Image 1 (cartoon, rainbow, N blue to C red):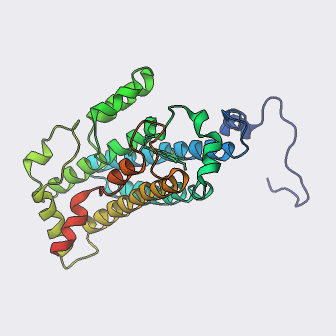
Image 2: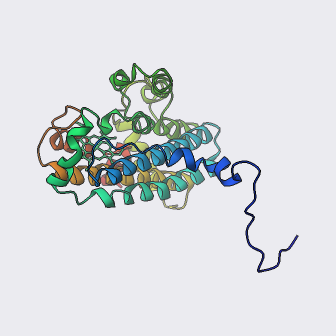
Length: 275
Ligand code: HEM
């Protein structure tokens, strides 16, 4: 039924509002427990929580894409990958409030963090596993959290998004080597010359509008945005703490630098030199 333009929204609900029932904003906005008295800690904590939420959405999209590729449903896979690129842009934009910390500003709450570090983020680890960056040792920090550990264990054994993309190409007649198709899925994906040739042939084809090229471009967009997240994190860290070691016990910037130079979906990058 059409309402009059001056009709205000409903105010009267028997229990909690339907908005609250759906969003659980009351839960969400009471999960902020800073560990210091520093007024600057709140945005550090909330930015971290916001990023955890984006990781969760992106993991969901890539799982959707991987499962769709498994059933050769390219439109559903492409739609999920496309959504994930917009979400990655939002994730990356959330660095803004933390990108300009001085060492003194960061020090004001750093010691309160103890040994806490984003390195211990299980959702980030699932994201890395989906990209092919598998590692059983990354489960160790989560031994004490059964649900998280079980989810990570499952993700470790499952094909990554890239494994599914390569299996999809193989079913389409591309010469993805058997050693890659039958690899131990719990191991980190290593670049393979045969896969590089597959992408090279796809990209060398006259038809740049073919589905395989569009899939490759969707994946490289993801790879570029992941690289940007890692680099924005690296630069924010360099500004906030220079070359000090990390709260998680690593060498800090030097360790992050090594991780940030790695390219996701490696052959999609190297194949370009041969087209
Ligand atoms: C300016 C603030 C930040 C600084 C100085 C910083 C510093 C560091 C350092 C030094 C490491 C290496 C591990 C260690 O020894 O702790 C690390 C890892 C990590 N941080 Fe941050 N971080 C910051 C903000 C964030 C935020 C907001 C997130 C969002 C969740 C985050 C997520 C991560 C993740 C996921 C890793 C592991 C990366 C990997 O495994 O390759 N960091 N961080």
